[in-house]
Amino acid sequence: MTKLSVNINKVATIRNARGGNNPDLVQFAINCERYGADGITIHPRPDERHIKKRDVFLLKKAVKTELNIEGFPSKDFIDLVLEVKPNQVTLVPDPPNILTSNAGWDTIQNQNFLKKTIKKFKESEIRTSLFVEAEKNMILAAKDTNTDRIELYTEEYARNYTKNKNKAIKPFIDAANIAAEINLDLNAGHDLDLNNLNFFFSNIIKLKEVSIGHALICDALYFGLENTIQMYKRNLK
Image 1 (cartoon, rainbow, N blue to C red):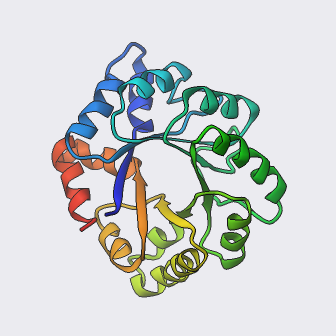
Image 2: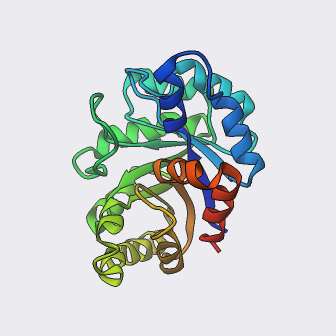
């Protein structure tokens, strides 16, 4: 079964626009789980423009499925994750001022750094995942970092899906096959939505989890949260 982890950053963005606690981020996460989400993803950034540090601790107590924390492994981020101990940490190569994740790790250039960082998390029994592009060399080098999983960065697939979906999916099929051959578990995320998710899911072997935020929250404005989560879940069958 491929799990659906809902990224709730955008809900925090709406809350922060007016201050206070409306919408209630923790209650939103609880509702996501109640409506069928298999996990909750958050991506705290240094400027706290959406997820705040206190949110991380509150969500750790509230989430009953799986909590996945994404982020660039700065010292502050590493310390936060080691203190909270989520089910999974997903490392992304985001500089502090970037709007959203826009590239995977160069796992060759950053091999030693990633290996040392992942070792810290694994010593605390936190499952690790590396955000990577669908490139053979990057996936093979990711394996050498001792990460448990990789998360395929799917923006290119989503961008080209309407032009030629068979051509768009090909690099990701190859990437999934490589990951399977070297016993590296596989996640995916970025710009997956109700239009392109099922085709991706149907063609990618041994897909453990998809993390979806922006599109799902937008769809929830039209269709309602419960209905939207069930629509995404149906696309993973």
